[in-house]
Length: 297
Image (spheres, rainbow, N blue to C red):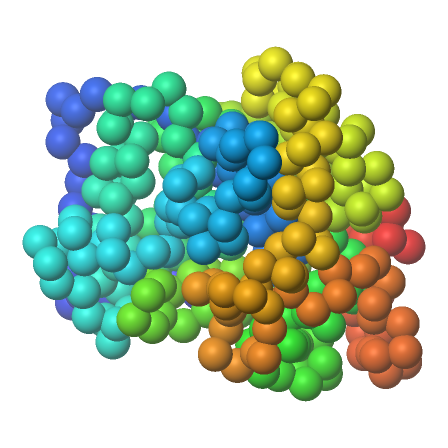
């Protein structure tokens, strides 16, 4: 991820008004792409917003909270203008966008992000001033690589290098501003050791092995009462099979144009038999410290 300061010739990053009231209401739902963020969002949507007999649609995930890269928010903040070719323009608007959500009067505002918890061109992407807490979903980078390759239309070898690139970004398009991912290890390290707000780390593999335990712990972290019947229902309504069925029937607005489907297998250890020995060794060497930390090696 680029970290050099904005050149003097670029438009200056606007400063916050000195007398503004800062609200720490943002609860980040953060992850590297293809790590289980959608699963967590749909669980929470079904637990908090769902009915007793009908799952929340995957295309209504925004009801829980918007993502920090949704271009419509930047267009609104810039009085209806948003130029996808202006690679720094959204950074100049980012504080206004996040501050607007944080200050909307709600005690908690969930916000999805794939951005690294770091600085891009002089702009802090995740400002503790607005951050109440964060939920960080981590997944075996070998499985991330396989899913990332499908989602972004890359070969596994290309994806292997992409998630290991400190300058890795997702380019802007009509619906999203640029996202600064960095490499997988830096992303994990930056979020799990964040300062200024508490972080609950969830391993994708633990969510698969015992979803009731994983999501019960999530609700407890968020300070929400655990209703056993609602918990069971929300887990069922956000299961991989349910989400995949919805995509097959109704499509999914978050599916990449490079992929035939968003929900593919959802399995752990899907990298086996897919990644070459060379790519597997590369990932295990490059990300050894964080992989060992989370039990992947």
